[in-house]
Amino acid sequence: MLRIPSFHYLLVFLLPFLLAVLSAPIPHYNLSKRETTGEKLVFSHFMIGIVSNRNNASDYDADMQRAKSYGIDAFALNIGTDDYTDKQLGYAYESAANNDMKVFLSFDFNWWDPSDASGVGSKIAQFGSKPAQLTINGKVFVSSFSGDGLDIATVRSTAGLDLFVAPNFHPGEGDFSNLDGALNWMGWPSDGNNKAPQGGVDITVTDGDKTYLTTVADKSLIAPASPWFSTHFGGEVTYSKNWVFPGDLLWYQRWNDILKSAPEYAEIVTWNDYGESHYVAPLSSPHTDDGGSKWVNDMPHNGWLEMAKPFISAYKAGSTSVSDYIKDDQLIYWYRPTPRDIDCDSTDTTMGPASNISGNYFNGRPNGWETLADEVFVVSLLTANGTVTVNSGGTEYSYDAPAGASAFSVPMGLGAQAFALTRDGNAVVNDTSLKEIVSECIYGIYNFNAYVGTVPAGDPDSLQADGLAALTSGLAVACEATPSLPATAPATVAVTATGTPTPAPTASV
Ligand SMILES: *[C@@H]1O[C@H](CO)[C@@H](O)[C@H](O)[C@H]1NC(C)=O
Ligand SMILES: *[C@@H]1O[C@H](CO)[C@@H](O)[C@H](O)[C@H]1NC(C)=O
Ligand SMILES: *[C@@H]1O[C@H](CO)[C@@H](O)[C@H](O)[C@H]1NC(C)=O
Ligand SMILES: *[C@@H]1O[C@H](CO)[C@@H](O)[C@H](O)[C@H]1NC(C)=O
Ligand SMILES: *[C@@H]1O[C@H](CO)[C@@H](O)[C@H](O)[C@H]1NC(C)=O
Image (cartoon, protein in one colour):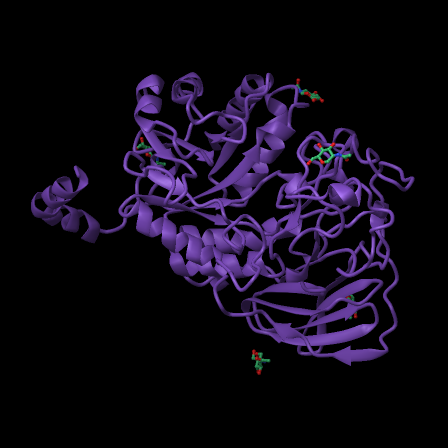
């Protein structure tokens, strides 16, 4: 009711002024001025719940420095209600300040109670004035996972600070009238019911953005970008989940979509949620084991952040073309470690007896597994055109890649995976992945996570002891909780066949 008259007021009295401001030359924002309305910012969702083992602010420095160097402006600090939350938030805010990064609170309503608006406001009051707090036009930025029903007026009054409230309320469920923006969390195509598309229902991420844009109207959208989703939590951990969302070339397609749709803010989902396989942080980033190391060990994702880097730069510059931001020739590749139809039922007993299957807790392959293709995915970031050759287990594929970013996939072949870029017949860069594709159940379980590599190769990256702590728990086969990628790549498989690569789909995802 109130919005319509004030909008008219805006149009009639303020429009001439606004037009004058908008048609003025775009000012060059320096760092201290950059958090202003209309400036595109990139966030990444950071799970405080997985870093209880950190002992000081320095333990956050590598994450802060790394995120900043890839163009991420702020971490959304996802908090539950654990006894270590305040201590870790203190370290995170301190490290961010020391590293010229920004952070903000993101309340996780799996653990927080939407009826506890004053508790939420008090927590914001506790941290919102710290130097590293992200502000937009002086307003303290705050977000959430879920939380429909939260009384925003009480949050604002209890916080006692001017707030920029952009939670993950859901269109049709939450009351958006007192918000400054909203986060669309659903970075994966789905059936609308938190599972992979099925029964002919395929709600794309872009569909979700459109619904959010209609609902937030003239307020800000935080649009998600997520590379993957796969989780397989067994009965030995209290929250059991067993599903995937479509991944494949999602990360590449989504960043292309973001360049086109240019949302006000973008959020990488996530930095370090290892258990759901959508982390882009190094495996070595200090964290505990929520049960996810069974599918995270030996599965670095650093290449995904490499791929995103020029897209982040283009997005923040308001450019629809990534080409100008590609400075070196680079290939990013990824694949699941096993074909999807291998049968792990006899050894994958992590999900408990078949007689007790229901909901998210059931035996066997993760729900949605049919939506993932048995392919090796390759993104080329090139300064000039070239030929990308893939040897996947002895079948060779050649792809004529244009300058700029492009992507294709080839069927996965068992064994070593080798990648080469040539230009005018001359070698440019090449490498063989440390991870072979195998037809066996690694640790006896279904693993639908992705291995991500780059050419030239990045630094070695492996889980530390705390991140491996629960690896053997609940497994039916004996194994050692240690990183096991080799120091040097396996020998390539002699080429005995050639095949045709498939270019990336151009439809939005
Ligand atoms: C950046 O902006 C701040 C605030 O307007 C100003 O004080 C400072 O001098 C600027 N720095 C540079 C390098 O332009
Ligand atoms: C911070 O704690 C880590 C262990 O978590 C330790 O290795 C490091 O030396 C500590 N740094 C400082 C500055 O105290
Ligand atoms: C059945 O599954 C539930 C979780 O949905 C779990 O709490 C319970 O322990 C399981 N029972 C058996 C016999 O495995
Ligand atoms: C690559 O670029 C060269 C010129 O630099 C051109 O001659 C050649 O046709 C291009 N190849 C492809 C596959 O586009
Ligand atoms: C890989 O790179 C090396 C060193 O530049 C080169 O000698 C070799 O021919 C390259 N291999 C391929 C398949 O391009």
